[in-house]
Length: 434
Image 1: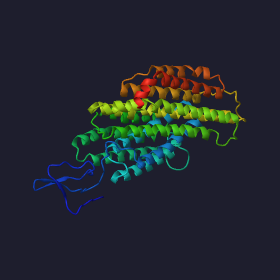
Image 2: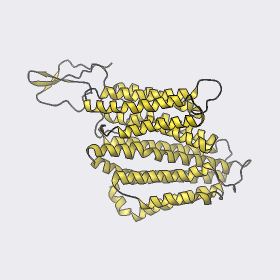
Image 3: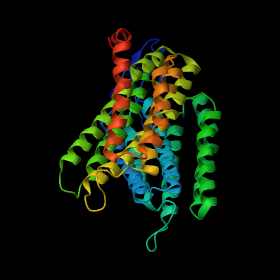
Image 4: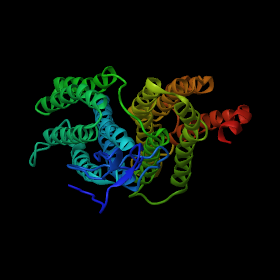
């Protein structure tokens, strides 16, 4: 509990509370004046400023998701089957929704001030426990705790903390409080189905996971647009920082793929090509697209602004991140193929789901960017749509090519796209980046 008292109340006739006044402080009328006594009777929070940047605590909070993403790629890498890939996608959806809720909270009140600091650290701990259990989220190993149940309970804790902090900050805002209460059933539905799934196996377990995610995602979408945003720039920056996290994980996957192998020229070439792929994916998001959408986001008003926040950021960024993590799996496998001279030769092709993940992940990422740009800025990207089709069409061809050549092919396709956009739309690009 935090209480702030000043020796004398500050009285300003007819004035409104200061923008930096802590949520929970109430103005008191004394002799016709408005006296602002900065007292919080319960829990304090501090509003996020309109032009606030991402706080160090939010970046620290994101670090636990770096670990979680590496656990997903480990899950896929251990058994890159269709079922396991589906399980990884479901886990990614849970992780993403765990993160999204706190991006909305921290846009209203500062993450590094008052009670939200404690809540963020507690949620971070719960996510870390979730990440520890990811390899066993569907198939519990003998001995130890019931990992699927631990995963489900951890998710429940993350979501419950999110609801509780929203109830605290909406105490003086009946409209926001009503929106939060409409959101509670979807949270309870999602977490309940996940708890049920933890006690099942096989297809029914997967069905329960789908129902859990449907309850969370669809419930939130249907629940209305009565949420609040204080800072467009902060909200956009939070989501772009998660894209950086995913891209960082893709770079780490390059090194992890050859961590125990001696350095060779093939490894160096493959590593540089992998880094080029990550760089081109970064360029596709940050060079112009994110700026265009943020400008449209800033210009929007009312419910349309909330819809952009939901659809372009809370929803569309999931396939972006998922696409990057899928590419990470392909990069990791290719580096292992070209570096392991005992089990593979340089002429061996990358086949199966790792190949599909490599090209399909890049296609998914670009497709999400097409939607992101179309909905947020009203600009449909024909070049990126064509590139999505090309990437998917190249999978059968790449199936028969050496793994290193396959990586070079992916790099070339992305490079052609970025070069085309950079030079053909040079004037528009300069205007947007000015």
